[in-house]
Image (cartoon, rainbow, N blue to C red; front, side):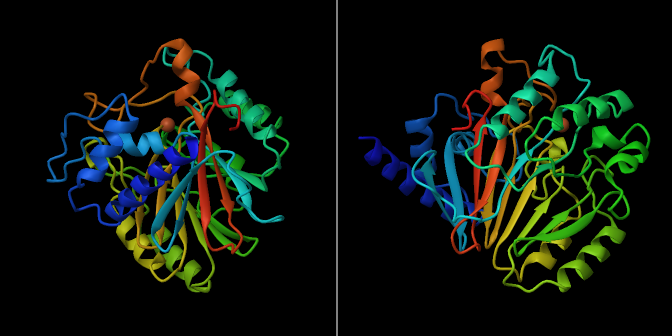
Length: 354
Ligand SMILES: [Fe+2]
């Protein structure tokens, strides 16, 4: 029965994938079926004036991020539940993304962000195989105080994977233009904190897009010029993983949930066969596939935010205490056997790594 249900989910998700390849098309009935079958909550009000009716769609994406493995090959999404067999070759790439830890935050949405970050680390430590490294996609702290960075470092020291790559969030840079962040985490970075490296024949690019202009994230001409040159040195066949705090796709510009000059960056990535873009900032899972590019945003380890347009403004969202762990989480990214396709798997902090 479970198998039949999963097969049904997969068919629906494949239909969603074909939709996601063109965000400008209105979602057809398949999305609404997904919404009706699997969701107890759904978006009933579409406040985005761009003509795209997103009712149901975003909630469906949010559902898909819980306990379901996503993979993308040639722009086609597929899914299966956690625990359905091994998904990566021995020795293959595997890493974990965490995001938006907001050390120092202490409002009702989460009065103990240290404890939930610790839970995330416990979950990573409980994975059957240690990840190669951890990526933190920004908002390490809430107000960029030295003590907040110290607390983050202390908790991360408990991870059995000691290598952590960072990009800044706007909370890490707003107070002092990123000075303290760069002193601590930017030693090998350029400019406002961007850099790249290769690992297991995958090219990783960390970008800094938190110099906010008119409410939107920006990369700026210097970083874009560097990115163009950096990518030129890589063969098209090499998978690329890009990570940055603010989404590099336009999720909800009214709330600044997008990067004003991301199109130029994405243009440089077009020739690559496999591109995975990992972001944070919005504190919820959303995914979109466009050609060979998979965009994915991660949950926070600290507090959730409302779905786009579902509140007057973005910000910490209080949920019942016993529901909090169910809206926080980590993201695992793993190479499949051919090392061309990266699978993105989200799990919540109450999922015990499943
Ligand atoms: Fe954040």
